Every structure is written in structure tokens, then in C-alpha cells.
Image (spheres, rainbow, N blue to C red):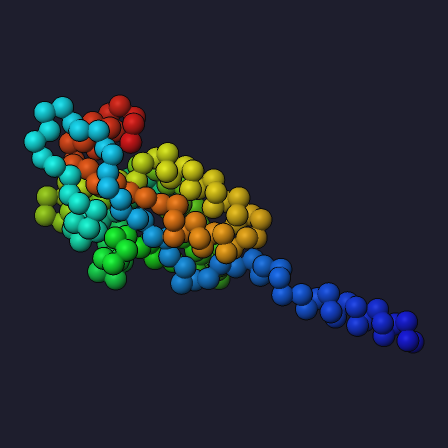
Length: 183
């Protein structure tokens, strides 16, 4: 009997370990798309200058992308609550990156993080004012997936804050980069 109680006590202690991830990400986690000073090549005979990073955050009206597993461009309107003027970043809502249905609750969603051709447009002329280079997206995706699959959610949250960077550009610059597959 004493032996049985010892085994039950050990099983109870092992089952109470708290360092094991629960398999769910926090619903309120967000991705910060940090807008940095650009290095976009100047378009040939380009008279228009790209906006500053802060101007991109203030004027971005929509984010466009080809989501993971998709072939067509999708877009999302950028709400005022997504503009982080202090840190010069655009925030993606948790619902864009973490499942919120009963079947997907707390699971990483690949639509945005595995997307490509991400660019920002204004409301007035709907022209491009900034973009996330595909190389940045691919590197961030790989790092996030590795951390997520390892159950290292703290690293996932850190990557959500630091791995995504956008650069200002003009519409003409973006179209030229895209035509050369250098975006």
C-alpha cells in the first residue's frame, strides 16, 4: 500500500510540472511590423521620394499580401489601433496570426506569417508606400515555425516583435522591384 501511494505521489508531482507549454498561443499576441529607413533602390528617373517610416505608419490604409497557400492578393484595412506611432510600427491583430475558432484556438495560423508580397497602400490613391521584403518574410517564417514547433512560445512572441521589418518605397520603386523579382 505504501508503495502504491509513493507511485501515485510521483505521478501527481510529474503531472503538475508547469514548464511544459500548454500548446496554445495567447490570443492577444500581435506582430509588430517595424517600419525602418528604407534601402529600396531608386527607380530610374524617380522624382518622387519615399515617405519617412513614421509617415508610412500614419498613412498606411491597407496591407496587401498573398497569404500562405494562396495565389491571389488579399488585403486588410489598417485600423487606428494598429498604428504604433511611438515605436514606428504597424500591428497585426492576434486574429491574423492565432486561431480563434474552437478547432484552431491558440494555434499558429500561417496565412500572414507564411505570406509573401506584403505591401502597404494609402487610402487616397491606393499606391504603394512601403513593403516587407520577401527575404525578411521567409527568414521570419522559418524562425517562428522552429520556435513554435519546439513549444518555445516566449521566443515566438519575441520574434513577433522583432523579425518583421518594412521599408518605405514609392509605388514606382515597388513595381520595378517586383518586375525584377527583387521585392
